[in-house]
Figure 1 (cartoon, one colour):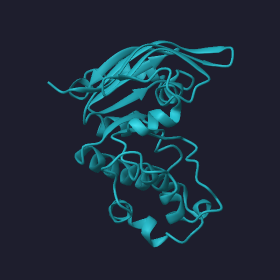
Figure 2 (cartoon, helix red, strand yellow):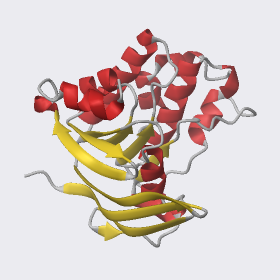
Figure 3 (cartoon, helix red, strand yellow):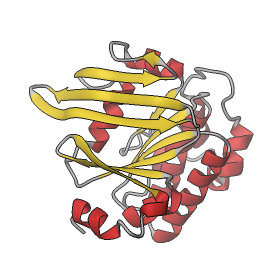
Figure 4 (cartoon, helix red, strand yellow):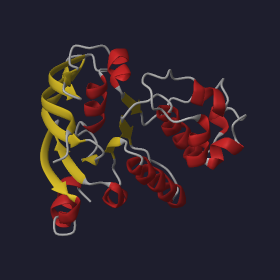
Length: 234
């Protein structure tokens, strides 16, 4: 039986006065790749931010490696071994690619070296002296993911990594995500593109209105396709 690295139960979350999460519950086993699916506004990104501790207010339970993290500030949560890769990527325009990669602190041993990251993303090595914002959208996404890999985090929270990217770049991001899983990373992936998500994930959680309403394992995706499409409105 796979050990759960993350256990979320009864998670409530707010933006100011707006109550967005209404009792989210999910579990992720060590080394699993799990997606959060749902329409826009379902609460997927808010769930990632809440796990990372960067919501204004959250209640409930988020246990990482059997340690309760609700109540901890986001920097302490990061030091436990969780890294968040936001949809907006957060590239620093005044820094070149390599400086962006070196910016986040190493929080735990076991992070990937620059050479390892360049091995995963050869484009970044070729562009290592380019300003971060002069990269293509796909290269910026690679840089955003690459930056998290130095930190020593074992759980990666990836928010819409394929959003707005050309199909050939989406394919490359998928290859990298599968390589990261093979290296032992645990990944929680928010993704609108179910066709892409189905190629990489072990399981899919479906969200509606700030709640997890279903869970589908990879082996059942084909027979559950109509149900999933109904959830996603596609």
